[in-house]
Length: 440
Image 1: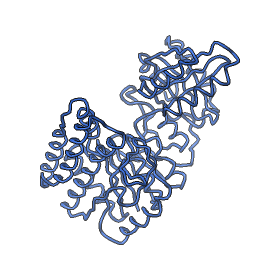
Image 2: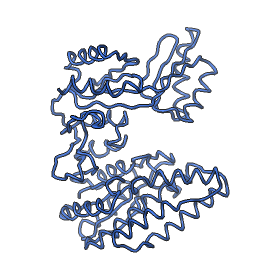
Image 3: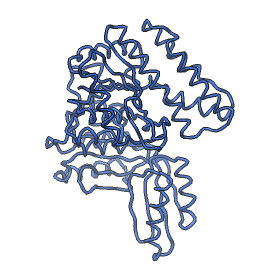
Image 4: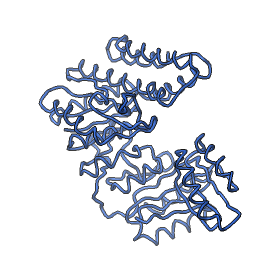
C-alpha cells in the first residue's frame, strides 16, 4: 500500500484538488491510502471562532460553512453535502457560548470538523471522477490516542485495529480517504495530534499497514538548504537521515510534524516530501541511510524567549536545576537550548505562552528571573558536522564580520547540529551568510 498525505494548502483551491485527484488516479495500482488535512485556513478559523464564542457569547462559523459550500459548488458537488456536520458544529459552538467555557477537550472536538469535512468533500469528488472512494474518520479505523488534548499521541495498541481495517482495501477498488490530525482516546473523546498532526497520522498508519512508501505532498519542492524566502538560491536537499530530519522538526521548519518520522523510518519505510506542482521531481527522501554529505540545511525559529534564572546562593545550584526542570515539565513548557552554571540556569523557550508565564511565576519564588524577548534560534544541521570543523570556524568568522554576536550555543553529542541564538532582526543576514559559506 502507498500512503499519500495532502496538507491544507495542497487542497486550497478547486484546481489543486483536481490536480491531486489526477496524482491519485496515476497510482491506483499501488493501492493508495489518502490522508487529508483540513482546507487551508480552516483550523485557524475554527479555533478563532471557538474562542470568540467564549468571549462574546456569539457563534459565528459562517465563514467556514461558506468556504466549504463554495468549494463543493466549484467542484460540481451538492453545496448542501456537509449540512449534517455543519449542524453538529453549530451545536458545539452554542454550547461553548452558553457555558462561556472552552476546555481543551471541547476545542479538540471543534477543531476535528476541519478534517472531517475535508475528507468527505474530497472522497465525494474522487467518486465523481470515477475513482471509488470512502471517507473515514481516523478513529473509525481504530486510531486510539492518549488523553493529552491538543497534542495527543497514538497508542501502540491501535496498530492491529488499523491494519485489520485497512487491509480490506487491498482487494477492492475503493480508496480510503482518512482524516489526518484526529483520533479518539479510550473514553471515546475526540483528540487532536497537534498542529500539522496529519503528517503524524500518515506515518503511524503507514507503519501499521507496512506501506511501501509514505508520500507527503506539499506545494514546495522538498526540504531546502534554507528558507527560500530568505535565500533565493536555496537548493533542494535530496536526502536526509532520521536524526537530521528530527533536528529540522525540533526547530520548527514547518516542513514536517515533530513526531511523524519515527514510526515509519524506524520500520524502514521511506518517507518522501514531494511537490504537487512538480510531481516528477524527486523531492526529499527521509531514511536511516546517510549519504556522507556534511551539512544539509539551515533552520531558524523566530520570536523565541531567552530566560535566565539566577540563584544568589551557590549551594542552591542542584536544587535550582531540579526545580526549574520540574516546573517546566509540569507546565508543559517546551524548551530548546539549555545551559547551567553554579548559580544559574538559562534556557530558550519557543514562544511566550501562558504555560511559560505560569512556570516563570513559580520559578520567581526561589530565583531571580531575567527575560529577553525577540530572540531567534539558528540551527545548522548535518550528520557530518563533526568532520567539518573548518567550516564551523568560517561560519563564526563570517558572523563576526557581519557584526552578529551569537549568544547561547549548543553542539549536540551526536554532532548532527549546531545551534545558537541571535536577535530576530539578525535572522535574515545570518542565514544568508551561513548559506553562502556552506553551500557556495
